[in-house]
Image (cartoon, rainbow, N blue to C red; front, side, top):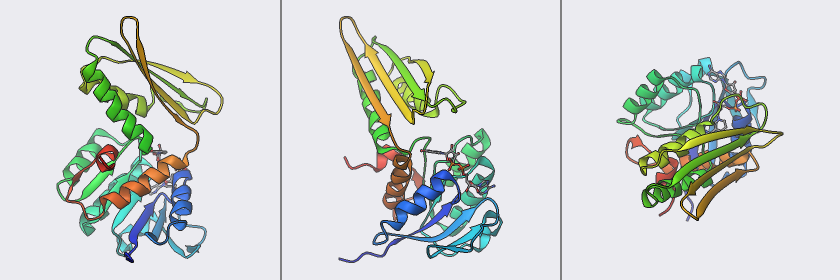
Length: 240
Ligand code: NAD
């Protein structure tokens, strides 16, 4: 059975994530159609591989779309969120560094449109989040330690993902401690360790390629289409 491709708007298209999204979407044209790509500054070319490109200042004139995927910067976040609300379209955003006020606007928008904002779009991390919460619930009184390793250019520590995993452990009743390593070109590793008397559980996620975030965002966009308004987590969108 033929299905109509999901119409995507990519916001932050000239960035590392935006480029990965465009490349991976182009490999799945049966199910995905990028109808517009927006960049912070005026695009160097108006049409690239059949995809119309626009400057962020032209957002109000965007063609019809089902879901916007936003990996831009905090200053680009409010306009794309407003556009999605105005058009009744879904939003998948991985833009980090958004303020408390932007977070509150996002929460309010969830009453009107389906959306997912995540600091990490890897499907493996979504599953790890669930496992950590479950382990913390079951292992009351065990020590919980989160060790994250990243490349030397990463400035923030602990990573946003470590804090998200720590929140999952906290919901399960644990009080996590954090350690951060900065070494070489490590894309990202997160170890969540539960230690009891005479035994230890180690839950680890290793990212070897940044495409996992773009793949996860495209997956989330596909799952979001047609859902009721609300704020979804990546783990809510996984089967089972
Ligand atoms: P990048 O700097 O390579 O690209 C940023 C993009 O945003 C560019 O296309 C730029 O033109 C655009 N932009 C800048 N200002 C804008 C504005 N005012 N309006 C609209 N667009 C604007 O960054 P990147 O590495 O692609 O990362 C983008 C964002 O995604 C960052 O916040 C990063 O931390 C985040 N990120 C999240 C995940 C995740 O899984 N959640 C993974 C990787 C990166």
